[in-house]
Each structure stands twice: as structure tokens, then as C-alpha cells.
Length: 155
Figure 1 (cartoon, rainbow, N blue to C red):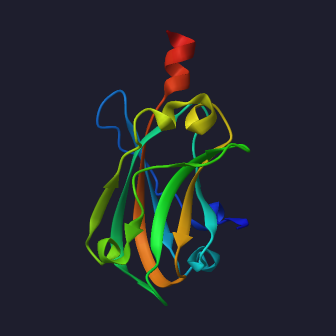
Figure 2: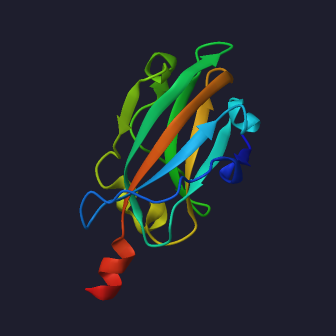
């Protein structure tokens, strides 16, 4: 599978939510009517992760129901440089991408905290569409990160 980069088509909403001094949440909109190449059964770059941050969770809020020509699944991953992408949680089925559904994905163990998987620089949040292509869908993607780099530099 060849990666496709739709990061410019998945806008970040202004502002961010910081529930405490540790976790920073950014909100992005994935609209398959705009990011049409992200419909295909392939891996797509969605969101660039800030340098020095580790992904600690992703929440998908379905704004419209996702539809597919088959039984499409969505797997969210973190990829740094040429390293193998690390999945965050399990694949999300069409049932869990119906309008109004909220799906919280959490990394397994400390996988996302490795320096090569989202902490230092050049990392990206990816979406792998499996089984079949999507035909429609729109979701809010909330990415929760912690600034590991700041802690390492500032002590």
C-alpha cells in the first residue's frame, strides 16, 4: 500500500483544549467529501504531531455516518519517519462510525512513547482504511498528546 498525505485537507480547528497541565488536545475535521483520496482502502496521513509530543489517545466523534461499498474498517496509527506505524487501539468498524458515535482509542502499553513512535520529530497520525473503501463520512478527530520533549529539556 502506498501512503497518501491528506494532512492539508484535515483542518485543525482554532484553539486547543488542555484539561490539565499535562495533556493537550487538538481537534481536526476529517470530511471524506473534501479529503476524497482518504476514502480508498489504503494508509493516509491525517495529522502532523507536534515535535516532542507523544500521542496518548485519540477520540473519533462521528458527525455523519460513515458509509462503505463493503465492511470498511478504520485503524488509527502513529508513524515516525521510516519506522513501522504503531496502532492506537483496535480497528473501528462501520457500526462505531455511525452519526453521534464517540470512539476513544488508547495506545497499548508504552508503544506510543518510544522515541521512534511519536515523541521527537517527524511523526504523523495515520488512518488505514481496511477491507473496503469508504463512500462517505465526516468526523471530528481529537488527538491527545503530552509534551515529553518539554519535560526532557526543562527537567
